[in-house]
Image (cartoon, rainbow, N blue to C red; front, side):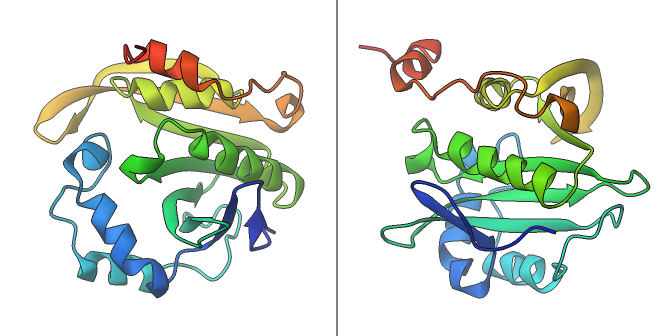
Length: 201
């Protein structure tokens, strides 16, 4: 099973708690953060309280549960963002990943560093057979992140999801246990990331 805290070079990962309430609600209310996510900028403190209260105490395979994991900066303990892990129902040892970062922590490798360690632990400690992710096809930053982490792009369901009053296309990504560690891990390159987004000066 996953063991917390999970520690990386810059971050500490632990189960989201009431201590994270203010910062978590703040970035979920940001329209740019919420754009490709399931919630809207109307997210409230009460929504955060309900999410925390409904969380499981451990992530059991095949349970269908979601666990929200806070990502804190090690030096200041401030909330950087969060990762979500879903134990897919009726599929033994299959886990879905999601990640959300506060705006000031986007584009600096925070998602890559925290998810890489979480993926390692899901395979090595949780006994995962398969890790998946699903993204809005317009979310280029998420696609780049998942490729850097070594997930395969398995396919695109075109105009398959009626989402926030429009048809959207969904990309599916995956990694199997036997693929874990088989591909070289690409280090985060801030210059390349900025160039890909047209931000390089």
